[in-house]
Image 1: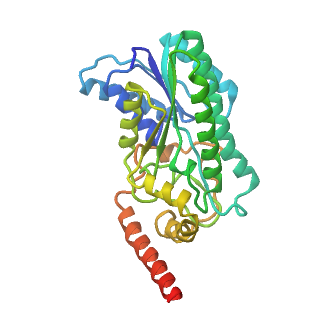
Image 2 (image 1 turned 90 degrees about the vertical axis):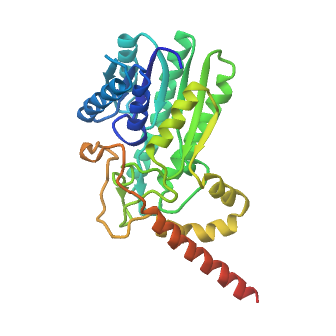
Image 3 (image 1 turned 45 degrees about the vertical axis):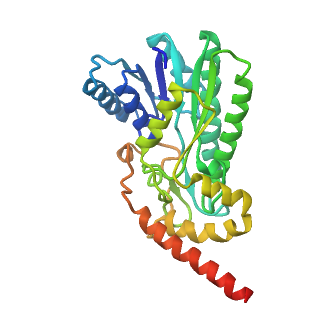
Length: 322
């Protein structure tokens, strides 16, 4: 990586917050952005402390609240970042929101809002990042996608649709960037990650979500982002079972479709019922923002339950054939 600033969009929680701390530990000047101004100040303090623990004093950290769905807000964010730091070497976009529920249960305005944040927001950030890189002669855009940008699962039509679109956008930008010297575009695809995004998600079907097993730490994704900034790559997958899930979705669709619903209920949805709520779709929930979501190793129970469900379905299929 060069010596300019790194702009982390979505820095107040989860993968974005972990990435900001990891970059700070390496002494990278930072611009931190999200909708939660007060939380960003806390993250800035965390970053300066991380830098000091690694022998870097006086780390430059700039806080600029912004909403990715507001194009003017993103324009102002980049203008402020450049006025303070001069050059932006990299932009990392980690922003995402989720609305749980069957497609017919999720209100149209909630579906549209997820598209507005996840897809249009990514496009807004990418547009300004690429324009900035063109003006200054290079830079690196890192887009955080998802395993669900490559497969599908019930109860998450909003997120799946948005992430498939984000992956398509990122791949298109990668192809176009090949003609622009010094510009790189990378796509990071995590599986289940222990972040607050699940507990902050909207719920329209009576249940909240939780990270499906196996669950990675946000620090693992942050480390992958730092590595790709050091050595640019087009795509990076983070998650032990990502390739297995993708292979099943693509090459064994009948089996995948039969297993994914019971596995979702076993490992991807909360046990208890909840009242309908909009989560953080339209407004941030600062009290719930953190690096980790507090899921611990609950996913091991999901693995056990999913294994039992899968075994039962296989046995039933064998019995029906005999």
